[in-house]
Length: 426
Figure (cartoon, rainbow, N blue to C red):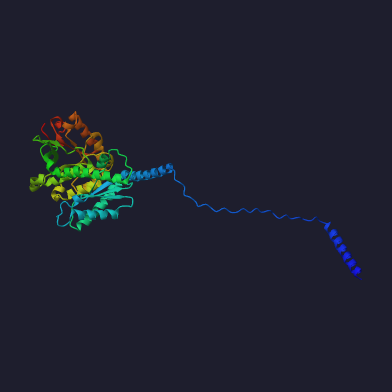
């Protein structure tokens, strides 16, 4: 019985094997290989070290800093430096009402409130506040300084301060102080500004204080075209020079000087008029009063404000007879002649123009709408005075202007016959 069971197991096993063999012949068996993975032990990361700066990198960084400083300084120098002259603003105010230190504090506060972030304010003890404008043109800087100065005057007025002197530019002194030096830092610029300011105070303020004593006004009658009647009075400005007893007088009516000094000189002349013409004022002014005035004193709004203030202080009777005789000027001032003449004419009787070059300046007067043209001192200024007078009169006729000749001598007198004129003995 046992052998029969064993035989059955063998038969079943054989059948299963045969079936498996027959089914496997239909498709090959797929052998999948397990990919071989290599595992390496991870190394610990080393801490990152900052790169060691090379010497060349440090030099580049320093050069970049210097370049930025130079760029900043360059923009400031290219702009303009203005001085808010607080000392002059309160010069006439009683000391008990406001101190220089208090006035300087007020000016500094006003300047800080009205300047931009890039501008620089330098306190100039005890005289005023210098403002270095970052990248503004001269005209823009002057306009901004005018606004700051007016606000300062208003603020000081509340404390008892007063004065007509507003602000000045001292670019000339700054150039002289620098003398071509290369400025690498803002600190250097401030140092030069302080040097320039001291030069400005010593020169301009000192000169301005002496102008009242050094300048003298002399009047000459202006004869009408008939040579008999008086058409007005011509004022000539004489400057006293020399020392050690050797005093001489030089005509300064048209002397070319720095605009700031010229403007101060013009203001002194205007302020002297009531004293010089005291007798004329008492008897009543007959005709016009011709007084020289530099066009550069009007081209700068800061100077013009001083001139307007000086004109406003004149007696009304004198102001209504006053005829400023403008120098023709040059550059920006000459291009602005028309507008400046109109602004000035609002305060005076009329405006005349000096014909420095008759062939050019008479035409400029016509273009600017100025009726009167003046040829001054032909005997002293021209090699051939009669020819210069004839050329001047021809230009006046061509452009329809009214000619006047001041300070004509014997050489030019014949050619000036029939023209309103003042005469000198030579």
